[in-house]
Length: 159
Image 1 (cartoon, rainbow, N blue to C red):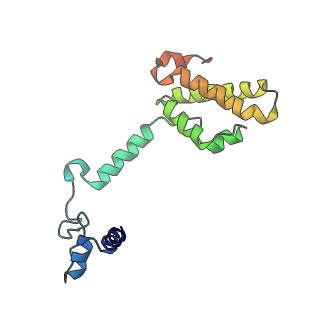
Image 2 (image 1 turned 135 degrees about the vertical axis):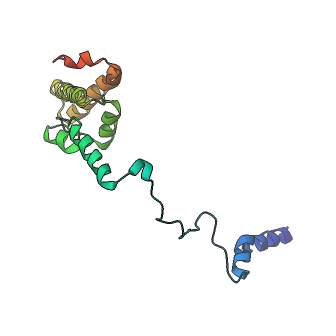
Image 3 (image 1 turned 90 degrees about the vertical axis):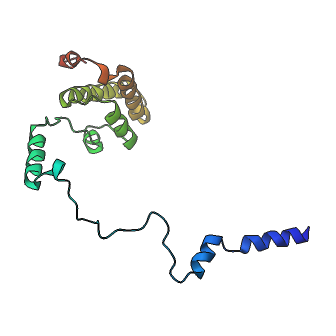
């Protein structure tokens, strides 16, 4: 029994074969996938998609100007200023469930805030107001499926 234990300890204390070979070699090879090829670095450019860099930046700036900006800010600070204690998880949840179109998103966010405030005012216990508002507003957002609704739905003042 002791012989087996001693033999196991001897095997465990040996260096792995690759490490032993690398130590014995005069010029050890680097591990795979970390070699760099300096002769091909920074000497190619995709001229088909990129074109002239000035034209490319002009296209980007024109598309940015033409995009419809959102009116309602979707950030933790904006919600905190409104008296709603939005968490990071709530922010991720909102970004996932809100519609993509900025005007639809703004209408949905306004309704989300209204629902949160209504639920907070209905809750009598002060320490449960934020959680009650968050729960009711997130439930509304989850069950409404705003991304699947037609654009006419957002034309109404009362969502």
